[in-house]
Amino acid sequence: MTPLRACDGRLLRDFPPTWQALRDPPGLLCIGGDLSAERLLAGYRRGIFPWYAQGEPVLWWSPPERAVFELDAFAPSRRLRRWLRHCDWTVRADLDFVEVMRECGRDRDDGGRGWIFADMLVAYARLHALGHAHSIEVLDASGTRIGGVYAVTLGAACFAESMFSRRSNASKVALYALAAWLRRHDIPIFDAQLPNPHLHALGMSVWSRSRFEKQLSSLVDRCPDWPGAAWTRAFGTLRAAELAEA
Image (cartoon, rainbow, N blue to C red; front, side, top):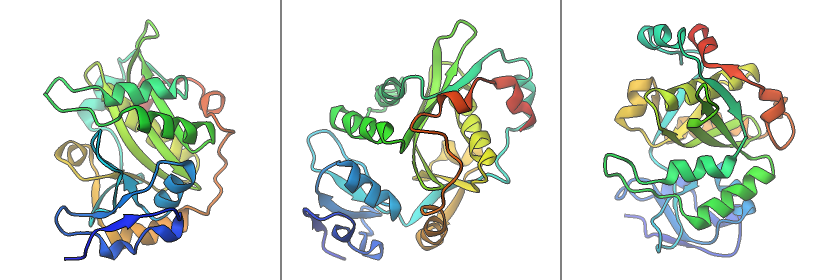
């Protein structure tokens, strides 16, 4: 087993080769460091992300298997399409990034514990201010936020971090809206980090670390036609019903 390496004061050079990630727990690469924008972006550039519990040092991960959505094949099911055609919700972008993060970090009704806490909020809000993190937000007919997803972007790479739903199907609407936006900018995939049954049911593919890193290296230095730091104006207002034709 490869010894767990400490993360010191350097940035890109600080991360060990991803093949050195532990087998148990799978994908744990190194420990320590901070959540500065520079370090986060250096990690994401190589597919490395932080995930840890409050009170722990920062843990950095490069999982051996990656949850990836391939956008040429990612589409709502027939049942969801029928439902969407009668849906009066709308979707916006970057209305309140921090609040979407807070919603994603709340303890779930099924007993799951939130993992997004103050340090993470501050760090990713900084990425948002720099134009490297964005929220897709689902609003009901009254304008109340009922679902959403937030993601990190670097070049043409997109890493979906977490999503929430206050109404049935709201997080699915957010995810399909994100996919529609990425397709508009000729982006072929987005990453969802760790495979799980919920993502599998939505149509994710499982990629090996090496396959993911090869694709990632071709995306991070591309310059898609993104708008400025916030997507709000360019994204506009998307009717959820339009996603039935995605």
